[in-house]
Amino acid sequence: MSHPFSALSPDTVMSAAESVDIWPAGEPFALNSYENRVLMFRDDDARNWVIKFYRPERWSDAAIQEEHDFLKELSEAGVSVVAPWRNSAGQSLHHYAAFRFALFPQCAGQAPELDNPEHLFALGEVLGQLHKVSQRKAFQHRPRLELESGIEEARQRVVGSQWLDKFQLRAYDAVIQKLQHRLAPKALDPASLIRCHGDCHLGNVLGRDEHFSLVDFDDCAMAPAIQDIWMLLPTDEPDSWRAQLSEISEGYEESLAFPHEQMSLIEPLRAYRLIRHSAWLVSRWDDPAFPRAFPWMADSGYWDQHIRQLEQQCLQLERPVWLA
Image (cartoon, rainbow, N blue to C red):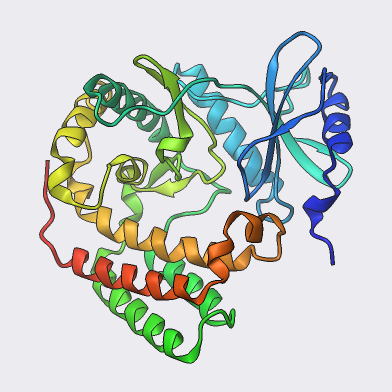
């Protein structure tokens, strides 16, 4: 049985762009993206575009539109983000054949350098500006980050996948139970959740010199502000965060008070991401792009390593939290 994205040929991509009166000058170039399909092309007016085809059945149209409207709100407030192109009728989500897609102007640049204080300050600035706007209202159609239910959903997906042998399954279940026990007191206060980027790692920050833009809001969600900060820290050793976090927080506080009170959530959020990432790979294995991109996933050694990583995360959760 073919995967829905197998019907997304170069001709289909070009025809989709042409259906909204954007005329590619040549074949599109595929960018690294697995959840969706993202390609770049140049049009007849020498403008560079990124066209994004959404994974079928992942988000509702309302959820995608809410992402687009959030980006429009941010852009209009002067926050450096890449908002989707809208046609003369104001539409940003388009349909062609069986696909939903959006077009974005290309954002050129490189990720910030974590050993450059000016880059870190600028990164903090844009995050502070983002969260200042984020606090104005809540998402209605996007998900809310919930540690307990999110981890349990991921556990069930992995346990039911038949990827682990009986020994790995026993060890995996045991370590997940330990993590769930340690995370139980860390339930997120609903009042602390704001509209967040949700997947704010260095690959989603692009720019030059001391100006950076946030891209790819596909995982935007209601979450604590620290969710958009912790993935930018260089390692899982709190002692090494001091210099980097100091610069980020200074830039952040140009707009908002830095959420120091949420520092204790960093290791729980890291554990959540580790667990969810492996479950995501399992759930997407029927997509031919995933076995090609993640061939090591099929090796049983991957699960041994993953279980050890989760054991280490259990230990990390027991360490005292360093507060800036």
